[in-house]
Length: 150
Image (cartoon, rainbow, N blue to C red; front, side, top):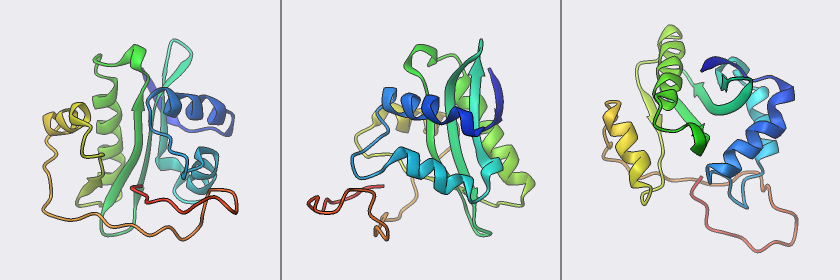
């Protein structure tokens, strides 16, 4: 797998990847998430290419205190081949080069396979409660409010 920064032409393939990996939610418009990321630290939005196919992604950021990673995805056809680990190592390398002392991420509590993946990479569960508040709605006006987890 070759890792490179996201290019605007990658948008449809990244959204399809996220859908194939079950990462999209009705209250998060993936196209808007991509546009927002391209406005901030776009060099930390990475994709993985294997035999000409976009098959992995990671969206990272650093706020001067902590790094974060979102949308780590490897297409189901390419899982368990080290691609997710390679992508996470590249994210860590780039954040470390920025002076980032700690990387945080969130995993839905029932996603035990992904929790096991991160534990194998040395990630530990922090004793925190994750809170969130939506400031901009991605849903059309009139949709009922939803509880959000991301």
